[in-house]
Structure formats: C-alpha cells, structure tokens
Image 1: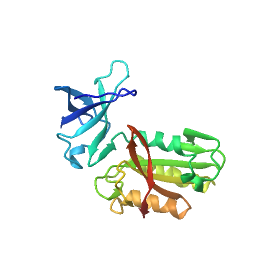
Image 2: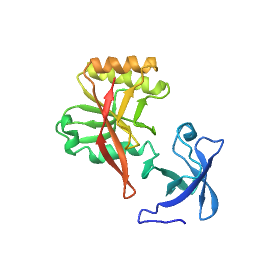
Image 3: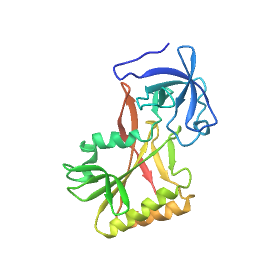
Image 4: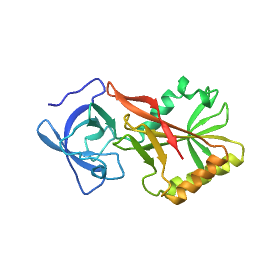
Length: 229
C-alpha cells in the first residue's frame, strides 16, 4: 500500500534495475512504474534490491522521463539514503553544529565556490577553508573510498594540493549513507587517488568521516566515524 506525507514521499517495492543504469522498476499500488535511481553504479553490486521497500520522491522537473526518483531503500530496521548528492545538502545545513567546531568560525559560507579551476563544495570565508564532501555506500560495518578509480576525484585532489600551497585550509569529509558503518578506509589499491590524497594530508589537509541516517523521512548526521589512511 502506498503512503504519503507532507513532503509527498511515497513507498513502493523495488522490482528490478534495467539496462539503463539510472532507471529501475518499482511497484506502486500494484502497478510497475519506471523510476529514476540516482546512482552511477548498479546497486545489485552491493545489495539484493529486489522486493525491498523503497522511499520515492516525486520528480518535479518539467518533461521528466520518470514520475519518481528512488530516495532511500529499506535495510534492516531503517532506510538508507541512495541520493549521494543529498549528503552535500545535509552537511551544509548542519555545518554550524558543534560537531564541526574543529573548523573554527563558520559565519560566512558559500557552496560551489570557485577557486581557480576548482569548485569547492563549501567554502568557509571566515577561515579560508575549503570543504570537499564525498559520499560512499556500503552495507557492512566498514567501507572503503573510493571503490573505483575516478579521474575527476584525482584532478580535484591535485587542485586541492595547489590550494594548500597557496595557504588555504582544506577539510575532506567522507560521508557514509549507511548509519551502521563504523569506519571508512582510504583505498590504497586505487593508486593514483591514494597518492594524491596522501600528498594533501601531508600538506595539512584535515580529514573527517560521518554517517547519515534517515529520521522521519529526513536525512541528518548520525555520528562521527573512524577514518583510516
């Protein structure tokens, strides 16, 4: 049975991923509906999605290909956020919490701030601090990042390295979409990324790891978790 709330979320039952990696089939009120799934990799690589309850968000973009986007999936006793981009909004909205006191004064903050060729997820003007936010999805108690090579992520680290040389402060925040993850390890097997990451750390880049939970259908920071390099 489909339910809704003031945010117009609905519930469905996941049926299958289809050939297009951003599309899936979800059963809503006994009808199979093609939905958008905001993941660049096949979720079946991580978890058996078939038959799981999913939280769906209506797509309000004009002329959208699908009526709903998969927002979260039921896992154990709760729901896990599947929209990686949402973690940036969560951090931005909660960055004034005491949890982030190590970043210093946080009165003036801009998102998607350009510094040369690099676009920072957040920029704290008070302390000239760049905040880079990356999300990871894992279904055990530990996760690694990144899971695959990303040329874009390596290029970002090279730009971050230049910014560190120019006197900017940098904080690299890893976000687990699964609140049951207790630690995240930087993946040494992705050589180019690891070397670039290590170089930035050696220059003074701060690192932090957090988990997100969905509470009352809204994502929020759950806890700080261990990060190993």
